[in-house]
Length: 399
Image (cartoon, rainbow, N blue to C red; front, side, top):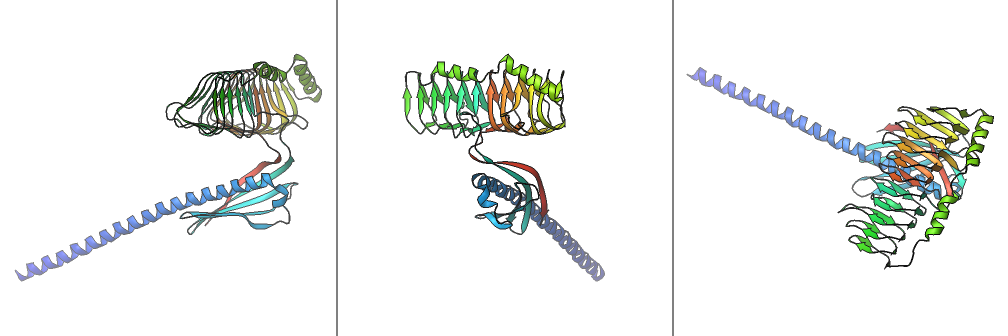
């Protein structure tokens, strides 16, 4: 009997030891998983802080390129701390290419550091010789995260804004109605709005400026400036129509572009699918299609006597030297969500312009049909200062 009691006692001890071992293992695993999740969160935060440092550098360099790029290298040119999160610091040094610098941004969260590097080329000078970022002969529709920055917008039809970024840094002139948001959707215009129809600001939307309409003004959202309804012709329709037509290319213009390309050996006699680096003026006597996976870059102006279809790919294009236009299109434009990159200068389209991509237009758009922008498409009119071009981006290291 005593032997049985001793056996049971030993067994109980063994069970307790096994349970303690298992419990410790589960506790250790739980602690490790918690530490892993915490470190993953810190990694993401450090990356975003490093990206924020690059964006802060972009802003400063655009505003004062020469002030920040003399007597290099310089450490902690830009830095900022965020309470209970972390900080970023930005260093700048010379790069061998002319007017080009290397920008290094380090994001730090606790013991985690992530460092990003960009090679940036700066071109000083004023903006384009246009007084608008978008000129539409038809209707203009913004949704998703589409935005128009830094210059006025002229619409010879209806304007609808269904994007939170909306129109910033310029005034709006619409021949017909202006509508911001639907329901509780957030959308906004930071500037004055003038319409020869009605202005409707739905709940959650904002006009940061004056609203002047020949028709009614409905304010379920917010208008921070003066509201004037029943105004006599806030937009001069004759002048607006003349403004639109003044930018329309003549047949002689198209013929001259074609002749220039033929003389230069850059004439494409039918449908064309570019891929690679280009320079100078190119004339496409048919449709232009950019295939998924294609990459188009360089300083070139494409004149297309047909439609444009982007099926994906990446574009990094500036106008040919001496030309303000990067793309001149006779018919329609379709750019779906898969396309990304940056286009400088002006995009000219005589048909409808439908874009829903991650494309940034550092210039302006002239559209003689309807302009429908969605996705993350943005028009950033280049103001006086320095234009930046990111030549490369990479993550250097993680600590």
